Image 1: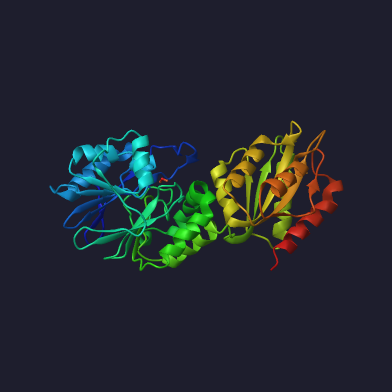
Image 2: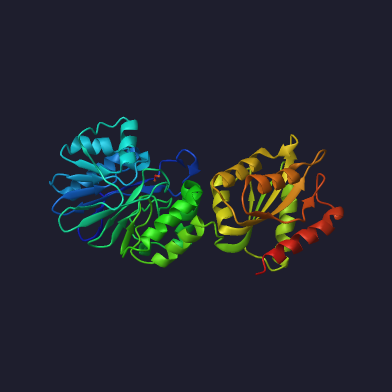
Length: 401
Ligand code: FEO
């Protein structure tokens, strides 16, 4: 059975929702599922904007067939060729043998790399090009490295609809809803939107800043991303989030405490630090055990908060491996501009504190590490109370404007 939604006059959502996939990109947990969005424009010509992941191809084809209602498909605009959107392209080409693919040179190259039979069926465009399909004229805007090199966005100059590729997307299945005003985005979606952006696109902040500047020149009425809700209002809200995330500006003044604990002693210290901070009036705190929290959630909160405390036991004379993995993730995603605190533990050769400081100082950029540390031998004791007070006071001072 088809399952489609009208977006605006002449434009329909023909995507599908996915609840069976455990790990997006085989890395990131998606307990709320995900949507793969695809859109059809019915003009003098018919135009499909992107396809969907192979897992939901059957539903998508049924939707497409329903909306076309007997008409042929003339064009397929591919804004992004990553397989969660491009995988069903070849099937669409088989079913609609007259359809031509419109995309960038790099995207067409990637179609060949995936083995798609597209010879004679492509029209290459570049940024600044336009195509008229009847009433609607589409302008193409290249968006390299948001977050693949071939990416572009398409703007309908007739009605102000922006097909934004992965930009402004989110984890989470739509489940009947389509628009941001049909959900409570700030309550139910923002954490997944942040986790999606930071883990998938977070590395490419400067490129996102470029596309935000281009977007600011357009009279946008609707934003149609490839995942998650369509935006037909509240643009300031989501643009502000994207501006902060892509400029590595903390969203909130607050403290992320991530601890690595083998026998509960470093965990106990993390709890003591959290309690002391709350006593000092710092209540915006999230505390996570690095060993049982998927790193995508830690990355998301690292982008959200202004301060990060790394509390780690020493393991084989090094940083606890799971904590090291978290550090490697935020380094890979170019996180910067955070104030960091270090809590070290070790029973016979404590090294994690000095090694985490070295990592933050030398392997990352603009990570300001507080001079005061907490250095425990096996567990926090009376002998640590002085440095605990110093550490907390310094952190609180660093939160004052
Ligand atoms: Fe949703 Fe970059 O693919």
